[in-house]
Length: 156
Length: 280
Image (tube, helix red, strand yellow):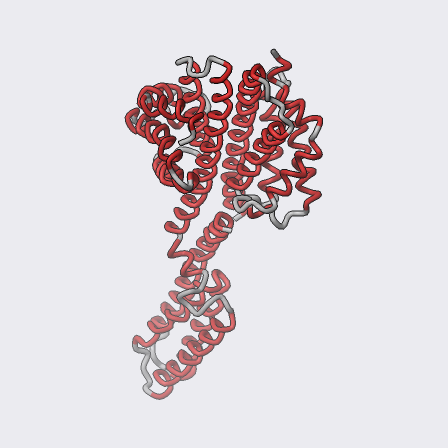
C-alpha cells in the first residue's frame, strides 16, 4: 500500500534534476510568476531541489504537518526576504506540484487499470502535503507582514 | 463539457448545498480556521455553494481562469471584510476541495477501474480549478490590503509625497520658503519701520511656519525661530517705547506651533514609511 502511495514521490526523487529544470523553465516564463523571470536560473533550480528534497522528507514523516512547519516556515521566510509576493510564491509551488504530475504522466507511470487506483492514492497524498505547505507558507507570510509592521513602529 | 468530468460536475451541482453544509460545519470548528468560528453560518454556506457551482460554469467557459475570477474576487472581498487572515481563507478553500472529494468518495462515484481513471482526470480538473482560485484569492487579498492602506493613508500620502506642494524635489520647497521668508521680512519692515505698528500681519507668518514643519518635520522649527527672532529684533529696532509683551507672545507661539506641527508630521512620516513598505 505504502509503495503505491509513494510511487509519485519516488519518481520525483529519482528525477529531481530534470523536474526542477522543467519547473525553472516554466516559472521563468509564466505570467503568474513574474518576479521569478529575472532570478538567476541556478539559484531557483537549487531552491526547487531543496524543496523537493524537503518535500520527500515530509512525505515519509510520521507527523508530516509538524515536519512541514519546521521546514517550510524557513522556505517562506527566504522567499519573503527575496521580495517574492505571496501569490507568486504560491503559484510557483503549484507549478512544482504540477511538474511532478506532468513528469509522471509523461513517463506513463500510471497507465494500467490497477495503476489508476494507485494514481488516485498517490495524488491525494501529494495534494494533502501541498495543502499543508501552502497553509504554512501563507501563515508565515502573514506573520512576517505583521512583524515588519510592528518592528517599524517600534523603531520609530 | 468533457465526459470524464461530467459525472463529478453533475454530482457537485446537484448536491452543492449538502456539500457546502458539511464544509461549513468543518470550517466553523477547524483549528486552522479559528476566525470562521464566529461567522454567520448562512454566509459561510453561501460561499461554499458558490464555490461548488463554479465547477459547471468553469467547465462551460472558454477561458476557465477568467470565469474563476468572479468567484475568487467575491470570496476574497467577503472574507477580507470579515477580517479573516489570508492563510485561513486559503485553508477554508482547501477544505472546500477536500469535502467535494470526500463527498464523491462517500457516494461511491468512482468504484470500477474505468471510474478510477475518470477519478484521476476529475481530480486533476478539480486541482486545476482550485489552483486558479487560490492564486486569484491570494492576489486579491494582497490587492485589498494595499487598497485599504491606500484609502486610510491617502491624505498622508498626498501631504508627504509632495503632490500638493510641488513634488518631492526639495529645491522647489526651499525656493518657495525663501520667497515666503523674504516676504515676511518685507512685511515686518513695512509695518514696524514705516507704518510704526505691530498689527496682526504676523498671522501670515503661520504660512511659512506650517509649510516648513510639514516638509521638514521637527527641523522646520528653524523657520519658526527665524521668524520669532525677526519680529523681536525688528520690534527692538523700530518700535521702541511700545510694549514688548505682544510680540514676545507671538514669537513664543511661532516656535510652539512650528514645534507641534513638526512633531506631528514626523509621526505621520513614520506612517508613510509603513505605507511604502506595504505598497512597495
